[in-house]
Length: 492
Ligand SMILES: Cc1ncc(COP(=O)(O)O)c(C=O)c1O
Image 1 (cartoon, rainbow, N blue to C red):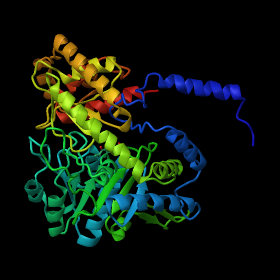
Image 2 (image 1 turned 90 degrees about the horizontal axis):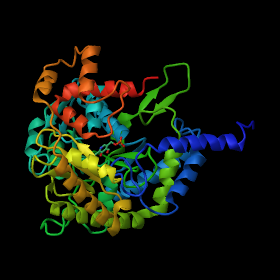
Image 3 (image 1 turned 180 degrees about the vertical axis):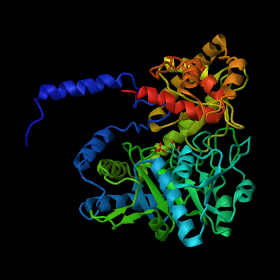
Image 4 (image 1 turned 120 degrees about the vertical axis):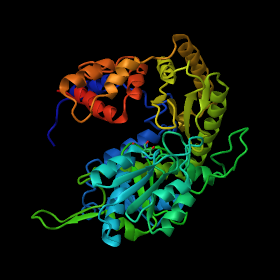
């Protein structure tokens, strides 16, 4: 082996990487309440790193050349189906890929088995953006169904009314990312089955957590003081009519990123999502996912972490998170000016303001200054502006919960003092008159300057003014402008 330099050089490179991380949100400690999942268990990350390193060079592209990947994947699918039902599964790179593959599978099934040429995808308006991406990529028409404005769950009758002879797939969430509530899976799946339509449960964020919570005999709706069913509602592949389910391991299985599973009730259905090609001069191709070459690092890391934590360990972690969710829910409801948008049915909270004098985006900026990241969610449909909290095991200590609630109360007081961000209605009206499809470079520049985005794409220190403008613009205009911002960031 030739060397790539001396140890000092390697150390210097690693130091540069560490320095780059200084501007990022922390990934440990439970203070970043979106994007990251920290089990808070000693030694788990070291195990994952070692497993990942051992398999980093293994190529999951060819399962006959690297039979180890088949063993690992079968073990993971076996563990997942024992928890969530189903008879087959595929390991993917993450929630988005699992959702894309679920839609692609359904489209191919609709074409081949039902002769549907112009397939439709029925989604609650709260379904994850990944399904809209899938529809765009794979040529399905989305039928978006509004949710109940009180509960943020979709109503079975509304979903039933959106089904047509061209529906390839109907999707429900367990839970939805934005509100953390569980759609009526059993009712929607029963109607889908009656109409011969496939039904996917997006349990990307909640599946592993809810499955183990159910194992603990705890429920999603038994918040103290809230009389409701103490059971996790039926949401998985044991529900008649549910044909596929996505569950991310890199969320509540606390594995390194790049790990999700798409499970199927019927192995025959899974086959429709696979791509095989022998009509070229190269090697025969069978892809079970959207990727070609793929490192087996994330697969090996997920295998090692799930083996190590085990069903008992995950049950204990879910129990800890469940207690923290309800302690936080109670605490938030006691803070003057804040309210929960929905009763938490899983491990996610959506926190809104009780009156217009309090701007939750300003609250997010204020609490960020105290070292917490709460994720702003702009108003959409019946859902007002709110803050999202993903509660992981690392948050789940009594002391962390107490600190978070105390800092949140102080942030609310400071946000009340500084008042809400006001967007000039004249400017908003002018922006709304712009046609996103014909916007020229100068208009883009002007619109971004209005939002406070610099020519280098960098956002101002405080996000609330940018979010206020974004929220006031029509969604299609935002969708035109956001890639412009990112394009400036990646400008070389
Ligand atoms: C319900 C749901 N579906 C899909 C996804 C997409 O997952 P990923 O970010 O791993 O691609 C997420 C991510 O938060 C989610 O919460």
